[in-house]
Image 1: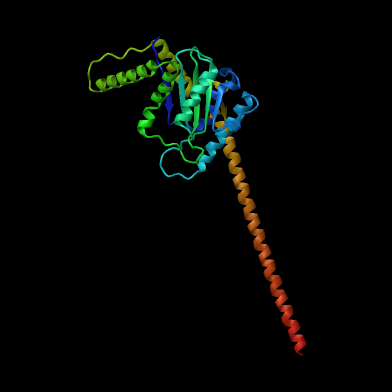
Image 2: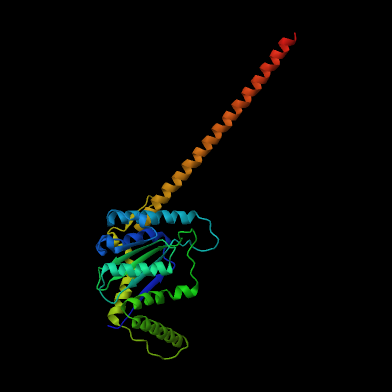
Length: 292
């Protein structure tokens, strides 16, 4: 098998599927216990076991979605809530080592980000899913320019080469250049042969990416439910819908309470004014009686 490195970074995932993605990458069937999880700048969300950690992380993702929806925005388009990253190994690797390499990648490239890295051992090749909060610990959004976005895979290749040999990084760069030249030639209408890639590895990469991006809905068997309006709704959105509805009810209750307090204050102010007026009337009456 050739020395292939796989790294897929998704900059515009479905914002509503943020919590569902957390559920997918932290499912117990794919993990090797708590040691499979690396929590970058959110270690306080780790629970006593993987189930509790999953619950904490899912709730965090749902809360972050609501916060971003209500945060001030300066641009147009959809609100970005998170990024996704998938990296895989060309072998079976120990969970601890895969987690440490991913931790190094996050520390070197997303130092202020809040992220969840989950090492999966449920396939032939060890691979790692990473959920990255779009807002950093300093409150600022992660901003990636075009060059940074296109070279994320090279930064993973650098860490990979540092661990297994520089030839991995070199071959990755050469294959990337080869693919770019092939696409440019095809765009110019030239008759060129497609670069040869390892078919087995390619199939794994494509299948895993498909599972990661599309088929994560299959985490739960019953993925759909019927709303009162008889419309199909993806179960991935159900927790977010409930949380958002609860948030709106809480806001509405606070607004009603604020209105009640303000009304009570106005009533008390009127009573004070009436009391002052009555006191002034009594004073004038006493003065009048004394003057007789």
